[in-house]
Length: 168
Image (cartoon, rainbow, N blue to C red; front, side, top):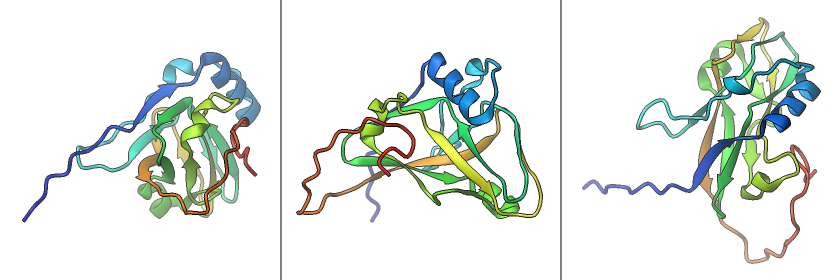
C-alpha cells in the first residue's frame, strides 16, 4: 500500500540586499565587481529531488588544500522547527573531493534575522589533488530542509545577533 505524502512549504529563498552581497563579496573574495544580477535562487533539479541546488554567482578556482568562503547572495526564511542543511553536490565530492569546512552547513530559522541579513556563505575546501574550477552559474552545493525536535531540558531563549559562525 502506498501513502501519498503531502509536502508542506516551510521556507522561502530570497536574495540578500545588494549592499550586503557586495560587502561580503569584497570581504571574502576581494571581488569588487557587481555580480548581484548573477544571483540565482536555489531550485530543485527534478520533482523528486530533496536538495535545492545553490548556484555560484562568481567564477573561482580552488587549488588542492585551499579553502574559500563563497557568498551565495541567498538568505532563507524558515519556519520554526526546521533547519536547512547544506552539503556539497555529490558529483563535486566524488570527482574532486570538495567538502564543506564544517562537513554540513546548518542554517537555523533565526539566522534569517542575523546582522548579515542571514546571508548563506559556504566555506568549502579542496581535499583532492587537482584544481576545482567553478564557473558563475555552476551548481556547487545543495540544501535540504529537515524537521528537528527539542529535548525536555530545553531552556535557551537567547536571541541571535551575529552572522556566519556567530554562535561559536
